Structure formats: C-alpha cells, structure tokens
Length: 443
Image (cartoon, rainbow, N blue to C red; front, side, top):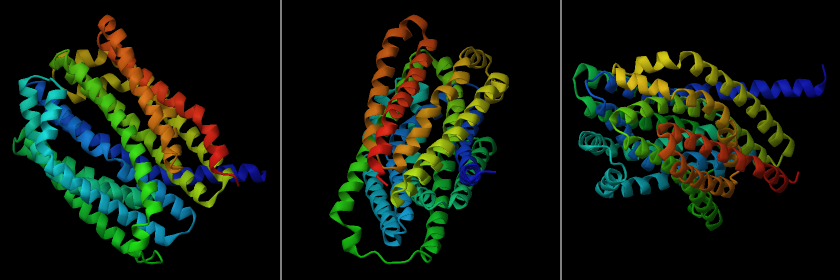
C-alpha cells in the first residue's frame, strides 16, 4: 500500500471522526422544526403550521442574520488553533461573547419594530399573523442565550471539540422537543407552548455551554490583556469578516423569507405544504452542513499553519463525503418522502399539495452539494468577500427568475427559482476556489 493511499485513508478517517458528531448535532436542529410542525399539524387548522413557520422565519432573520457569531468564531478559532496561539483562541471567544451581548441588548430594545416589520413583510392572513405575534413576543427574550450559544458552538468547532458540541446541540434540541410536546400536547398551549419550550431550552444550553468552556479554558495557555482583546488590527478584521458574513446570511434569509412570502400569497394550504417540504430542505441543509463545518475547521487550521497540501486534502475529502450523503438524501426522499408528509400532517389537502411538489426535494440535495460545501471552505479561510458577492448574485437570480416563471407555473415556478438560487451559489464559489488556493497559501 503506497504512502499516498495511507495518507488519503487517514484523511477520510479524520473527516468522518469530526463529521459524525457534527452531522448528528446538525440533524437535531431540523428535527426540532419537524416536531414543531408535526405538533401543530395535529391541530384542527392549517394556520397553526403557518403561524409557527412565519414566527420562526422572523427569528431566522434575527438569529441567522447574526450567525457570523458562530461562523466567524469557528474560522478565527481554527486559524489560531492551527497556529497554536492559545492567547488568540481565548481572545476570539471573549470578543464573540462581548459582541453577542451588545447585539442581544439591541434586539430586545427593537423587538416591537422588528415584529411590525416582519408582519408587514409577510402577508399571511389574520389568524397566522396573530398567532405568529404571540410566538415572537415570548421567544424574543431568549436572544441573549441563543446568541451566546452561537459563540460557544463556533469556538468548540474551531478547536475540533465536536463531541462536546454534539452533546450541547442534542441537549438543546432534545430538551426543546420534550418541552414542546409537554406544553402543547400535555397542556394545550399551542404556539405559546412551542415558543416557551424554545426559550427555556436556549437558556439551559447557554448555561451548560459556558460552564464547559470555562473548564476547557483552564487547559489553554496564556491570558488576554485588554490591549490584545481590543487590538485595532484584530477588531478591523473581525468587523470586516463578520460584516461580509452578515450580508451573506441576510441574503440567504431573505431568499427563504421571499420563498415563504410568495407561498403565503397562494393561501394557507400551499403555505403549510411548502412549510413541510422546507423541513426536508432543512434536513438536507443541516446534514450537508456537517461536512461543511468539518471543511471550515480543517481549512481554518490549514490556513493558520500555512499548509497548502492540507488545505487541498481537506477540501477534496470533505466534498467527496458530502456528495455521497447528498445522493442518499435524494434517494430517501424519492422513496420515503410521501410517508414523511403523511406523518407531518393529518390534513388531506395539505398532504396532497405537498406530494405534488415533492420531486423538487429529490433534486435539491444534488444541486446544493457545492453551495453548502464551499460555504465551509471559504468561511474557514475567512475569505468572506466571495461568499457575500455570490449570495447577492444568487438572491437576485431567485427574485428575477421567480418574477418570470411563477405567473406561468405557480408554485412549481417558485420551487424552480429556489433551485436556481442554490445552483448559482454553487457556481460562484467553484469559480472562486482556485484563487483562494493560489492567493491564501503560498507555502
């Protein structure tokens, strides 16, 4: 057996050792959304499903919009880890927590304008809007915990502490699911129960995560003086990278919001059907993001160590695994998608509508491989300008194409536009990858 073969197998083992826990952690996130949707789907009207979908969408803007707290923290931590810089690892975590606290105060102070803007942007009918507002007013108080959890998760992933990250994510979503079922099924609180369950789970997980990291920091050498924490060069880099990620994520959430809003215009039945299919999309997203997170960690370490060969190997092996898993998702949806839809709702009209558009979910995993995977590559390298520009172009494609095809093909046109959005994301990052390798790693 050649040395190259042994090395390749070693990379595959490393990727799977890291990816396994991350995938399990990621899949617990859409599982929570599925449980929320399924619990609401057992009630006697489709607007309960729509209300949770709309309410969760507003929080997607808040939390995913500030997802740079996770993504930026992972990239910077991984690079410090690769360079064996304990002081910068500590400083990255502390800067992230400070930023999360500042943003949380702003979110709480602006909660009523945020709710008003969300209600204006998504015209989903009186019943849906009223229940979505109830959901929002409860869950918004979890902002400090939710954003702190992003920093905790990002720091753990950057240091390759994937098993600890898995435990925290499983704890968060397992507790959330248990509380949702208890509050909704047991106590009959409908959307209030879903919101309160999420709120309590977020604070419990934040407390556990901060405690675990405090223990881990005892093994990280060095201390962080204020001069290092507030170093102008590092702060400018932090602001630039996080600003790019913010714009990138804002475009991504806007695409999902646009998709949801256009579906809502077609009535509660199609809104509910699309919400169920989006749970399948989120399952793909979080499953493939497992390998993207591994790429983020390994690429960041390679960049910190200035090792071009490790960068190439990390990208090649994680992409191979991602492609294989995407094929499994596509096959599973083709065979079992109808049964999943039946499980998610008892309403016959919603079941029929969702099955009509199920073929789009068979195509989506294959189209989205490169979009998810190269997100991780560019985030780990903190080459965020390409991510930002690519997402802006993808969003423009979604909106312009939908304006052309939805009047002709209805909801099929809407799904075609979302598929094109994913394809453009993939193409832009594939084209920018050679420049990343050439410019970033001269060694």
